[in-house]
Amino acid sequence: MNDLKNASGFMCHLHPSATLAITAMAKEMKEQGHDVCSMCAGEPDFDTPQPIKDACIAALEAGKVTYTPASGAPELRKLLAAKFQKENGIRCAWDEIVVAPGAKYSCFTAIAALCGPGDEVIIPAPYWLSYPEMVTAVGAKVVEIPTRMENNYELDPADLEAAITENTRLLILNTPSNPTGAVYRRETLEKIAEIAVRRNIMILADEIYEKLTYDADKPHVSIASLSDEVNEHVVTVNGFSKTYAMTGWRLGYLRAPRWLARRIIAFQSHTTSNPTTFAQYGAIAALEGKADKEVRHMCEEFAKRRDLVYELISAIPGVKCIRPQGAFYLLCDVSSFGMTSEEFCNRLLAEEKLAAIPCCSFGAEGQIRLSYACSEENIRDAAGRLDAFCREHGN
Image (cartoon, rainbow, N blue to C red; front, side, top):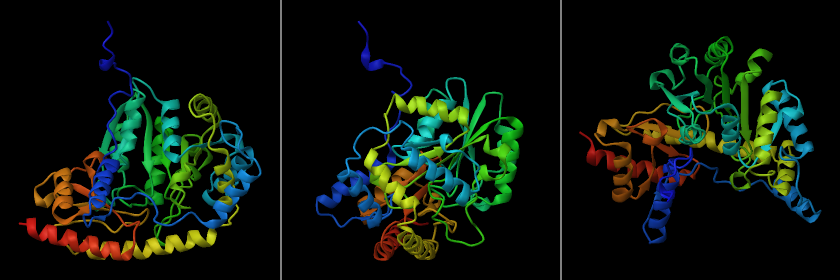
């Protein structure tokens, strides 16, 4: 008789998300009446702008409730192609655009359409914890390259060159970065792009935080914009979740070379059919600029919070961090306290009722992630609790 519990499919050994686990633990404690302060959330604490919601409501009332093509509504794809060309400098046609139920799914479909057993995927660490799980899910091998705080957590091109083998299929690049908050410099991207073209590997450029950058001297640069030749080696992924506070809407998208876009569309047609139809009309309103005022306000608020959280946390003895240039995360090195990141966060939650994310699952043991997608009051409260904990357990 078959032993079904010992099945060996590619996806049977995936690990649950550590971020969701500790977030659930903090929520449960709060429901039990504990005074929990959370710095876990990887989503804006703003509501979706009203013009976007109005467009979705209007689409529902107009009966926009049937299937669209698997790759998304043509009018949305055309707007996205125009967006890539105007805002990112990426040359593309609308049939190279694939809309998906979330940028996370866009990342996965690109990996699944490109990689399989025997292939290697390079991931700079620290990384978003889902990347390695996606690679594992398709049977490919993860190759981690550590990055350094003193280098702003940017991938060293020399390290990339040394890691590439005949089996290397893909490099995953995330800028602005979760969890480091780093924004890659153009000169670094140019060196990485030259290597990718010369060694003939693809790049998955996850740019979900592209509009959440805060320093004039560290603007976001899309690696696919560097040249047409580079663009043919890049899958550019983005979405509406972070920029427009639409995390629950589940809308992401990508641009890929036409040959690869066709593969991804075929894969998506057999797994999701199409992104939610009426939600796509909210996305159209966003791309038409109807929520630009709200987006600017959110970015300005995140910039103020970035300054505040960095000022408060960097002053805590034993904690090291860089000033993030984008996204809404602060990565903190707490290795001086002699605990694993998981032990540190568990004790921090138990003793100070402060929830933070342990980064052992992010390829960054000894570090924790704090999200400043929360109020100034919450940031000050969290900094006070972390300071008290560190002073109690410091050398």
